[in-house]
Structure formats: C-alpha cells, structure tokens
Image 1 (spheres, rainbow, N blue to C red):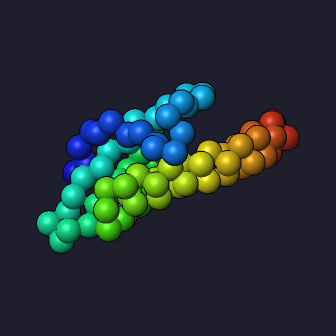
Image 2: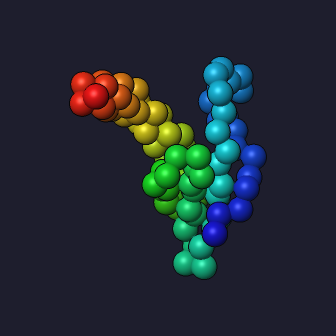
Image 3: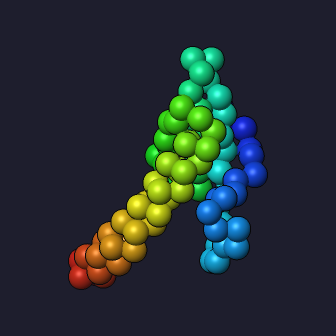
Length: 82
C-alpha cells in the first residue's frame, strides 16, 4: 500500500495548474513504488525515491495527454450513437 507523501518537483519549484496527490512507498525488496490514486493504473517503480517521483511525473503527463485525446473522441462517439 502506498502511503501519502508530499511530492515536489525539484526542477520547477513553482507549479502551475491543478495538482494531484501522489503516494510513494518502499517495498521490502528495496525499490520504490509511486502511484497517483486519482488516475487508475498510474503506477511506476524506481530504484530511488527521486527516480520514482520523476517517473510518476512523466506518467501523469502522458496519462493526461491521452485523456485529452481519447476522452473527446469517446464522448463524440457516444453522442453519435444517440
């Protein structure tokens, strides 16, 4: 289970736009598991806490970019079916 943690990106101290909660936990095997509970399936692994946070940041950006493409297309398809 991931435990909540405060997630910051050291490269850009000032963020713009909405923020999402991120959870990072260490497994008994020594790697870090990072997840974003607001985005189902958005889970990454890293050797260090920073690597897991960086990978999660990239995964969230890709997830949201996919939603911006797929969601309007799906909503249009559903509207055409009516």
